[in-house]
Image (cartoon, rainbow, N blue to C red; front, side, top):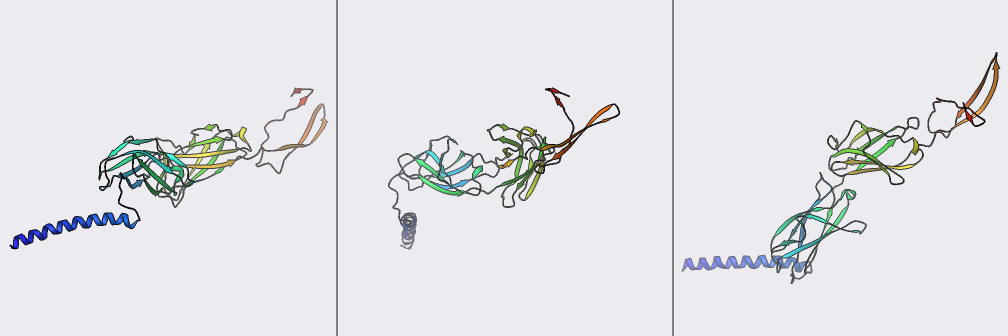
Length: 294
């Protein structure tokens, strides 16, 4: 009799535990003013942005155990802070993805997020014939700040400082520097000193600066706006809009002719105008006489 009583108590405890679990799960939905789903549903449990590659993020989704049936995940969208809706076009595994009741899967979503570091994105997952799921995730903060120096006296190079700011949460491996002209032309992979490349990047830790001497003949692009782009192996990018120095302005203020013995000479006085951005070095004087150069 005693053993039977203990057995009944044990069975009652199991039933009470199952009932309590159901009430907790159901109560959670009721507390949120939702009723227990009467159609298939999906939940996003995590969104992870890998610090070493900005070309994708990992999305973990779950078909809850109380869902009524298996579900097919058919599409994934990202809503940016300015409320633009972007579709994730490629995933691994490829969409659609089937999830059984209680099953969890992680997808690799190929979508570039480097322009949204430090901002909050909303990821939305859609299924057939059921409730979609949304998840707000903050992108890790990484920022490259840049400043440049163009020497008007030497229009064949410029100096570029690239700083990985102190608040960044990751190292950045600089691989190349590009220049984008106002007409959209892109000058790629400028020679630099020290040399940087994808094979031998320069690693910038937070709160550190890289100084590069960039070789580029910008003589024909004086006093024009361009964009300097620093690119990293991880995908983080730095941009700097810059206006190159104007032309050096020289003016001949006086010409005097004179004769010394049997030889004729002339003197010229040349002024480097105050508006000139740099000193000038004269290396040639040409005379035009009746259309002929001397």
